Structures are given as C-alpha cells and as structure tokens.
Image 1 (tube, rainbow, N blue to C red):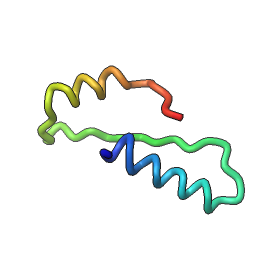
Image 2: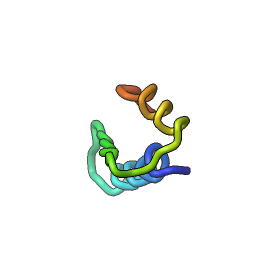
Image 3: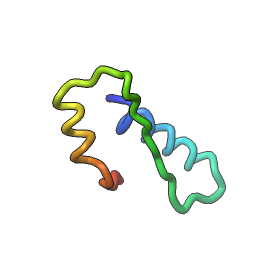
Image 4: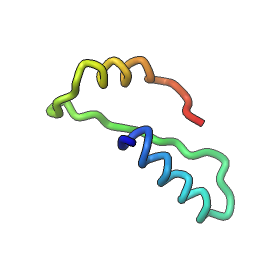
Length: 54
C-alpha cells in the first residue's frame, strides 16, 4: 500500500465517516522534482493522470 492510492484513500474514507454529509472528496498529489522515482512508478503515475478511483 502506497501513499496514493493507499493511505490517502483510507484517510478520505475516515473523513467521510466523521462528517455529517459528503458529496465528493478530491485527493490531489504533488510530486516533487527532487524525488527519485523508478521507471514503473513514473509510467503508472502518468498513465493514471485524470483517472477516477472509486
């Protein structure tokens, strides 16, 4: 389980549980240029841009 998707999804679910009403939760991820990422991770990230995760 990674940070996104992964822990961010669990945090969103817990926030929804604690709120009286939730219509939508948006999760944004900011990737740092100084971080080291593997080829597969970069390919997955780029291919998932704009995707919706339920």
